[in-house]
Image 1 (cartoon, rainbow, N blue to C red):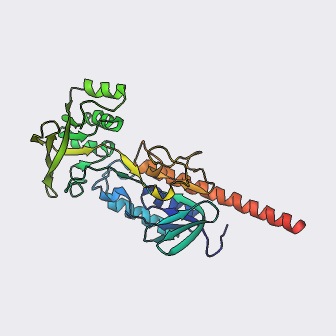
Image 2: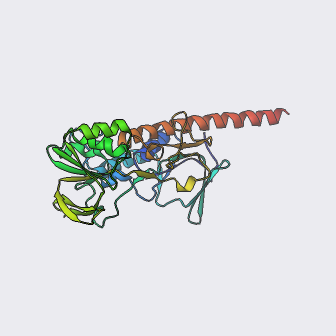
Image 3: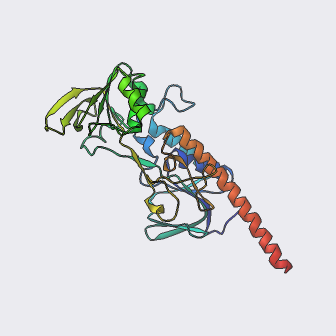
Amino acid sequence: MTASPDIRDVIILGSGPAGLTAATYAARANLKPLLIYGQQPGGQLTTTTTIENFPGFPEGIDGNELMQRFEAQAQRFGAAFLQGQVTRVEVGCCPFRLWLGEDQLSCRSLIIATGASPRMLGLPNEWDLYGRGVSVCATCDGFFYRDKEVVIVGGGDTAMEEASFLTRFARQVTVVHRRDSLRASPPLQRRARDNEKITFRWNSEIAAILGDKTGGVTGVRIRNLENAREDDLACDGLFIAIGHHPNTELFKGQLDMDKEGFLVTRNFTETNIPGVFAAGDVQDPHFRQAITAAGTGAMAALQAQRYLEELNDRQKLCARQCVQS
């Protein structure tokens, strides 16, 4: 199963859990994959100090170290890596074409694992405190806030789900929302409102995050949008739940997306273009976990392998028919 020297069998976009797992599986299948790192090598996990829910690491592991291990495993089986960011993609015909600036690459199958980026508040120190009290994932980090007080920003389904989840650990959860009513579905609203651990600050926004890199988050400054008054609220953590935006700009007009821009997949990881697969957060607006991303990365590589095998079979059949005629 070999392609022209100038045409790769598989190119993988993205180097988070989905992309690196796909690289490992594709390399083990002797597809000689090329992985292009993208704008955030290692993905969002590289900004996470400790991951305690990834199988196989009972004591937890640093996010950056975990991604380094993923990459080393893919390299061991022969995956190639290229530093850079794709600026243009054409998937209208096979081989698919990609550009890194002026440099062009071609491939017979493409795995998109470009992930999704959390929507942040735009405050000056939020990234400095990311992983040090600022989080965008209650499922990932809620355990660290047992018997502590936390603040969550947002009013949609995700915010209410995460607020309720955090009450399993936190002593008190304060929801800060810009409006005087929630956008979440009625059942999720009722669950949050009925939970005695959850309080609401309506018509309000976070004006500042208090704390530093050494001590982490110590509180937030809340601004009332009706009267502009500000007050400080002590807390141990700030969870931002105002959504994610998938990194799919390159594929607009070429691949099917939902209204939020996430790639639509069928039969596990297949997109609407045969030979193009999507894995991880770029096609998953629901779970956003390292383990689920890795799982879909494995699926995408296996499906790419089968696609290439079928493609080779069709080409061989065509060649025999041409000879016979």
